[in-house]
Image 1: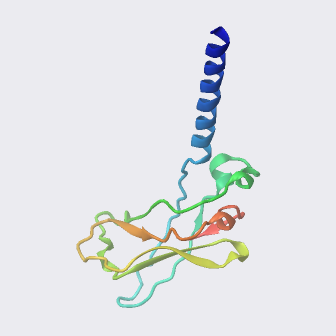
Image 2 (image 1 turned 120 degrees about the vertical axis):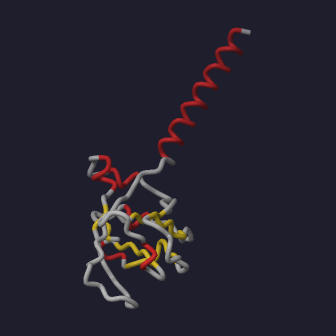
Image 3 (image 1 turned 180 degrees about the vertical axis):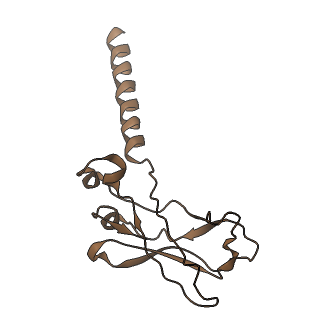
Length: 144
């Protein structure tokens, strides 16, 4: 009976250890970028701006951390207008967000085509979760 209890305890500890590792591996992490829309931008025209985002290695302080990242997908994209205060993102008719990394080219990761005039300073975009973004995240730099 003791052997059975010992095996059960070892199995339970091993299983919970695997669950902990999976939890760490499948965790989420923020990528942030600041995008500045020039005040001189014209109404009813397309605006293209570019910004560098933080990388995995910057987040974790490890130059080899990106080697362990796989099956990366976008979980959510949110735009916040904060300067000047009380600015509404309703000035945009639509928003497309692309990422690029080195030689990987640009891909669309989120968009919104029905921006209401009274949307306020926060805007959640519809994500394109149809592909993995491993090669972009593992690069040395990411541009949004």
